[in-house]
Length: 135
Image (cartoon, rainbow, N blue to C red):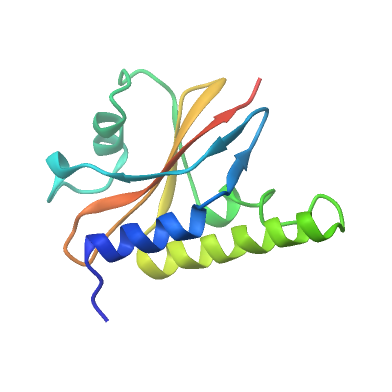
């Protein structure tokens, strides 16, 4: 089944609605798409351009499972924590389903912008963006 960008956007927004990425601050997820980059390969150079950050900013590329490793496990056995961990598991599965080549590009040092990106069947770069604070 072929999904267009609007469907992907709708499904991702639904998956992250009310979900916060925990680090030293709790940050929301935003849907991310840049029309200017259509047809460009998804790689570190392209993501640096998309981010608008200086090329010398450190970048780390990690697998999705590794990036979400602390989010997909409940910190405590409370119903809220278990439900939150399950939502992250569902988000992870949804990202892999919609964007099979999904990777996480972490840019910066203490305040890290994380681009969770893959390409659509039409070759458009899209995904989610969030912020992590790690001091």
